[in-house]
Image (cartoon, rainbow, N blue to C red; front, side, top):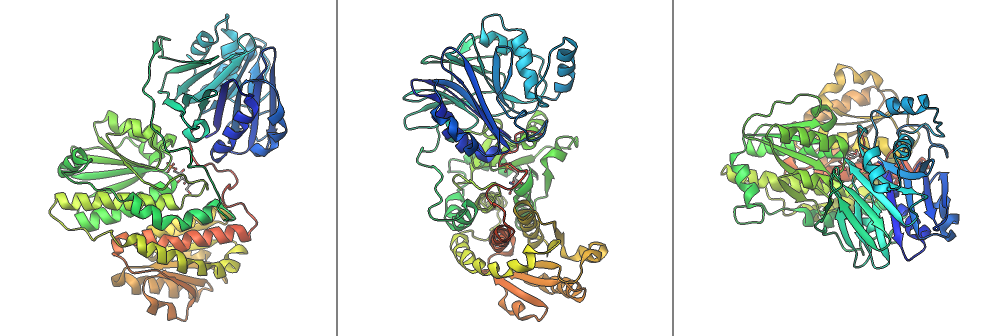
Length: 589
Ligand code: AGP
C-alpha cells in the first residue's frame, strides 16, 4: 500500500508529481520521493516523513518524472529505503511486495552488485538494468519476468529521458492523457484532471508514456488498445470545510451517504441478473478485512434473522488459505471500501476458481475488485480520506441491508424497511457528540472493552477497532456473555467498558454483564435505544440512539463509538486521519 505517480508532458513535472502524491498520501506516509529528468540527467529527491517534506523540490526543472509515497513493508522507515530506487541507468518506484526478493537479491550480490537499501523494490531496478539493451519497455518486460508477488511500477532510464514505462501485476495502476501531458498513478484521484482520459491497466500489462503518446501492451509486448474508464468528477477533491479532521467531517456525512447507498435490487431493476442469482442462493459466504469484515458480520446477523439463509463471514486472509468448501448455491459477497485489499482480492480469485458467483460491495468505481466480481453494488460514501473507516462502514451496511431486503423478497418474506435509517442517523450523529465527555476516562486508560450480544457485539467490535487504530489504546470488542469465561480477569478499577444494547429481549442479559464488570471496578458507558436503561446506577454516562429494527442497529449504534474513538485520539495528541503504521488501502499481503 504505497502510492506511485508519473508524468510526461509540457509542464514541469515536479509540481504535478507532488500534487499527485498528496492525493496518494492515504496509501502510506512513511517516506516520499521523486525522480526528475531534464533531458540530460536524472535527479532523485527523497525524504522520510510526509509529502510536504519534498515541497522544496517543487521548483525543480524537468518535465518527465516519477514519484512515490511509502508504507514500509521491507526495510525500516529511512531515507535510504525511500523510493525512487536506482541501479546503474534505471530509476523506479514500486507499489507491492516481491515475495522472492531475497533469492533474487542473493543472485545480484553473488555477481558483485551492491545495494543501497533494504527494500525488495531495489532488486527490481537491478533486474531491469541487467537486461537493458537500449529499449526500456523490453527491459522492463524482461526484468519483471522472474518476479513473484505484486507490483505496480513506473520506470525511467537515463538513455530515454522522455519516457516512463509502467508495469502492473496485482497492484492497481491507472494511466491516462490530460490536457498538458501523460500521467500514471496508483488511483484515479491522483491522475484525474478536467477532461482527462484514463485507463486501468490489467495484470501483466505494460504502458509506455513517451512524449505526447501513450501506448499499452500485453504480456507479450503486443500493442493493445484499451477502453477508457469512467470516474467521479474531479471536483471530488478533499476539502476539510472547516473541520479539524476529515474523520470528524466524514462521521457527519453518514446520514447523507446512507440514503445514497441504498440499492434497489429487484427483477425489474438494473440488478435483475443479481436478483435471479439471489433466487437460487442457498448459502452466503462473506469475505472481507478489518472494518469491512465487521460490516460482513452485521450483514450475517440480518441475513440469518430475516431471511433464515445460512451465512458465514470470513477474514479474507484466512479464507484464501483455508481451502473453503463452496457448495452449489453459494453466493460469495466481497466487501471492500477500496476494492484493492490484496487479501480480499485473493479470496475472491479463489472463490471464482471454485465456481462461486461473486457480488462485490465497494466504494471505488474502477477498483480491481470490480473487475473480478460478477455483480458490483457501489456504496455511495464518496471519497473517505481518513484512514479509519467511518461513513464507508455505515454505507456498506446500507448496501448490505439492501441485499437482505432483496433476498427476503425472493423468499416471500418482508424485511424491515431501511427507509428511516438516514434520518435516524442524523439524530444519532447529533446525540453522539455527547460522548466527548467520556474522553477523560479513555485518554488515560491502559485498555478498554466494548461488549454486546448479536448485532450489538459486532458494533462493539467495530468500535474497538476504531479506538485501537487511531488512539493506539489496547481494546477488545467482546461478546458480553463471554467475559466471565476469562477476559473478566482483566477488568480492574477504572477500566472503561462500553456496553451496546439495542435488542430488548436480551437487554437484561447484557445488563448482567454490566453488573459483573462494575462489581470489579469498571467505569461503565452505555450506547442504547432504550433511555430507561441509562438510569441504571452502574452506568456512568450513556448515548441514546433512535430505536430501529434490531437487525439493522449497528448502522446507528456504531456512530457514538466512532465519535468516541475520534475524540479519544485527539485527546491523546494523535492525528486521527493518519494513524501511525496504517494506510487506507492494504494492497499487499
Ligand atoms: C478500517 O478503519 C481500517 N482502516 C481497515 O481495517 C480497513 O477496513 C481494511 O483494511 C479493509 O479495507 P477495504 O475495505 O478497503 O478492503
